[in-house]
Amino acid sequence: MSEHISLSGLARQMVVAGVLDEKTAQQAQAQAIRSKTPFVTYVVQNKLAKGRVIAELASDQFGVALLDLSALDKETLPKDLISEKLARQHRVLPLSRRGTKLYVAISDPANHQSIADIQFSTGLTIESILVEDDKLGEAIDKLYESGTTGLEDLGEVDLDGVDVETVNEDGKAEEGGEAADDAPVVRFVNKMLLDAIRGGSSDLHFEPYEKAYRVRLRTDGILHEVARPPIQLAPRISARLKVMAGLDISERRKPQDGRIKMKLSKTKAIDFRVNTLPTLWGEKIVMRILDPTSAQMGIDALGYEEDQKALYMQALQQPQGMILVTGPTGSGKTVSLYTGLNILNTVDVNISTAEDPVEINLEGINQVNVNPRQGMDFSQALRAFLRQDPDVIMVGEIRDLETAEIAIKAAQTGHMVMSTLHTNSAAETLTRLRNMGVAAFNIATSVNLIIAQRLARKLCNSCKKEVELPRDALLEEGFPADKIGTFKVYGPVGCDNCKGGYKGRVGIYEVVKNTPALARIIMEDGNSIDISTQMRKDGFNDLRTSALVKAMQGVTSLEEVNRVTKD
Image 1 (tube, rainbow, N blue to C red):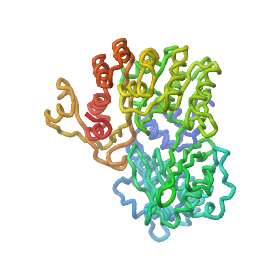
Image 2 (tube, rainbow, N blue to C red):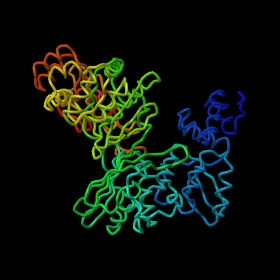
Image 3 (cartoon, rainbow, N blue to C red):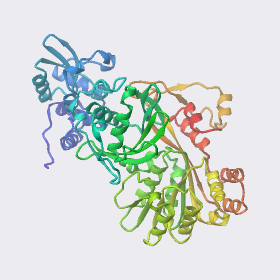
Image 4 (cartoon, one colour):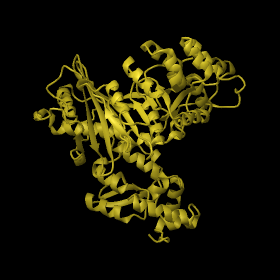
């Protein structure tokens, strides 16, 4: 591609006005063409310029009226006039109709093609009004989002065409019958899955009750109800989900596990882990969304403090030993481990993992699905790994003595072992291994690093506000006395960009390195209180302290700190 690209109308105007320099504008235009994104959208999404500035400039230069979208009532918009596919493709939003004239919101007035296409599809005269690109994207998402039952707006063709494939081949899904292929049900299920992906949710819950059926999404760790389909559809919805996951639809009395791969486009596919549970009124189905990109976030995005990050990186460089990550279900243990594995994943290192089931697929790592029914449990997989000349071994979870012993033997014989445990804190991790029956001297010599973690919701940067708290209250919560007055505590407000004042999550960590003094207490069979006291003496922050640091930095609120950690 030649260095000099002739800039389009709006890009040229932005350079003239000094919003962008020429080189940046050319690069942005080339990238936008490459990624098939409108130029304005590319510039705003990559924060090269503010949407407001671009909209004001375009309005001035092209003589198009400017409108603030946040002042509009989204309920009154005529969404039926333009299909979702067309609105998203051309990035336009229908505003109002008067006779044969349709007013639409656009962000790039130089894009005449989109206006022509919409004119052709609606048969109306199009009048364009300029809006900010970031607000336009959000308004389009909100306009075409789900209704109350989730069954209202299923007229779009693309819901039928979502490419879904079953990942496991064992399932007996031949007898799908009519119930599973019922068109409205298929579209409803696809819509729920797409909504969950768009909203950045981690789990989907389909729950039958005696007189109602509800669908909930877990977003940023909190469950929200999104739909209440009719109770009569319950068996059909569960049959559909089971067919998609390759499960036995005639088996309604036992829990089942399966996987679904949903192809959103040629390049993007998302995996779902599916579990069914027989309840009193039918089968509850929970789906975990497995986003393969979460492992590629990089260690800086996870929320480790600088000293904690240094300890983790140091432990990863060790030739042998054990790194344990602990915390409740859904606290991001797998992502922490995979971020570490991603750092170690080079050509000269042999990495094997045993998981139940494999959540994140990574190239260059040999991943094994544990299947206890067929005699392939964690201990069996570990034994096989040790004959496979490994450098790094990752065990999904240490649940029993046998797995713990083999993992410790591997850590003592020159391998790096990474694993997870379900405990509350770093100190309890060591006593938990002791309770399983692992000898104290084995724990003291093999465990290098323990990470206990929780996920707290991040405050939305657009709307968070400062909270005034008296000094006594701050001291009572555990803030250090010498730091009070040097930081501000923020609280949630809520705006269009977030859910209840929060957007995204950040990790809160307790990272503890095995020190000689700590090893001595473990050898002496010390309890978790002694171990915890020693960890504080060695200068390692507990979860509460780490969470308060996040509140002092203005990343999260005090309510959230109290929700995920206890004093």
